[in-house]
Image (cartoon, rainbow, N blue to C red; front, side, top):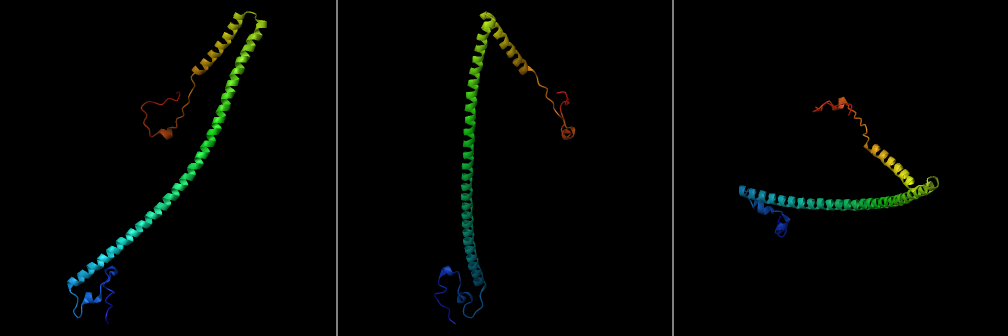
Length: 178
């Protein structure tokens, strides 16, 4: 049976013709076997490299798709967070503006109340100097009380859990009256 001559002439097939391997009637020689083994190893290595390249391209494509999905998800999350932050900032700005208006109006009210009291005391205390002295005494007393309140040290209590702190070696004794 004669082999089709154009079937094995194509080097891209990777198949070696049988007549080239065994010859006509003699057994294959060691060199021929080694050459055939090397040819087969070359074909296997080429196919392995091609498969590895295809698998690497597939993994890269999957990674790109996952990265695109992650980026799209991050954009959506960032947009939501920006919207929430913008709404909260607007709410805080409105609160601050209303608080500032309330502070200014309250301050003006206190000033007018002081003026009204000062003028009203004019009927009871006709002396302008006495009225100023009375207002000065009230303001000084208020300032003194505020200063004493600020200066007063507050008692801080520290609780020590001996079991929890047993592993620590203190440099100084821990007093409970701190």
